[in-house]
Image (cartoon, rainbow, N blue to C red; front, side):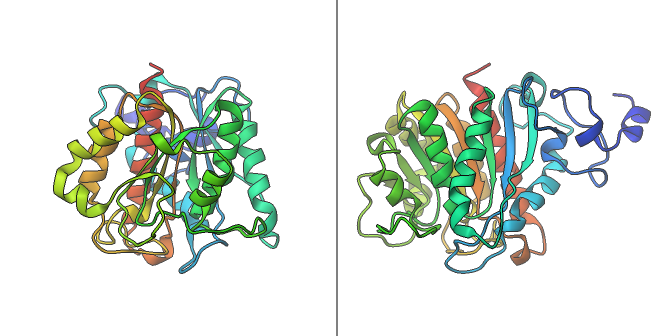
Length: 319
């Protein structure tokens, strides 16, 4: 694109004619959508949609992830002019990607939110699209999984996290970001034999049969071997990828609710995600980005990169 064209391009989130191609407007200006994709509720021409769930009323420590989708979209503008690095293809040019906007809900009725999330995601999937979700706290993953499993059947889970989120919770009236894995296993949503949790560094005595590659092991064996192990565990199963940003060390992602030292580095996470290419990824999310606890914006930048990598993972086997 000529420089003068780039300088006159503005608000592509509303003005662009199609769902493919990079975005050339100034990264510091204009309406903010994810990767400068077009905002639309009509997904007839879309391959995959990005949507936000700005819900953070299920946290055990610091709130603020309701502001995560907005911050991730803002940070993603930095990536919009260029193909994602290291993939060998440009997901923005080869696939029609829409920004479906955020899910609406009544903040005063948190118990109603999981069912709304499930219906919201199911509505996107029903339009023939894949979906990548921006959170929000990690409680949102349970209803997202329910919607995906209704379409695909039980799924393998690859979860990047400091915590297993598998604490026992047999009260179905509770909404808790630390129990989604336990409930998902009890409901038969997760294929535990082909699931893996990466970056764990908090104690939970019962892993529920899910393989754990904890953070010290990732540091010991390295990113490449970690990715090999993930691929060995998942195999040919269809897989959902959930990335809690606290899987990264607080040095790389301080803006999160329950930070734990000793986590993954950004280079490790990037290398692992790219080496997962070829897995049968049906969807994914990035959660727990809490902008108020990071004045630098580094956590939202990391979240935007993770979301872009998830798009690439989803697209890789569909090229």
